Length: 247
Image 1: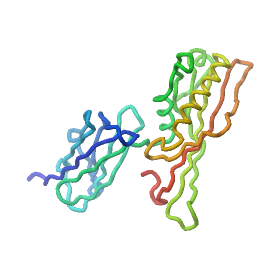
Image 2: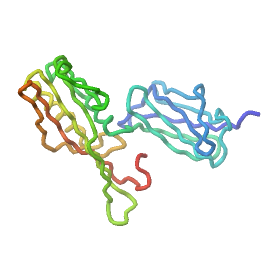
Image 3: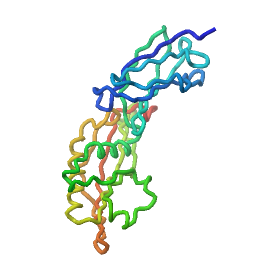
Image 4: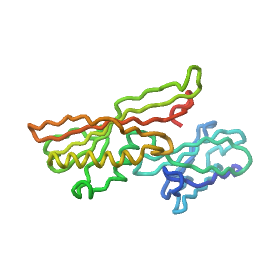
């Protein structure tokens, strides 16, 4: 006997909360029964950002009061969102706004998506997480400029004594390196300043503030013609429930 139908549908929005997102993969996990939709029952959003899933495709289906996790991911990006719903009735509409799973990935994608290479001699640097670069030597820098992103700290700050919410502060470093020239180094710094300055308020749905108003650290080694400067920024997530860090 087939499982009773329980349809979940909705729209998936990009990071900005207004642009409908195509190509997002939607799947579901029944937390109560520890079952996941089979691959053939998942859904990829079309141009209108719409999706529809029938939880009857779970091995045991879904019953009233089951807790189900609806998960959206976007291939090739760091965008993800998970929403928990509780089964009641036969249809549930659940819209989803994507976010970044990691502040380092957020900064990397913001820089990559908003970089204007016309401001850096028509050359766009390689923008990457530092942990994806096994070794960066002068030979590599001789052909490509690099902007490397990494997390240096993460702190939890209670909003007040006894508060059930807190502020999370992520310290992120943006490390610009070039062997081209001092002028190219200045242009890299100026472009990073421009992009980060444009994202001070609401850079993404999961994070509230980027604070780029800090000094650049000069780590250049002029004896080998390496110009290297590091910007240290803070990303703040406000009013986080103290028992729920990520979602």
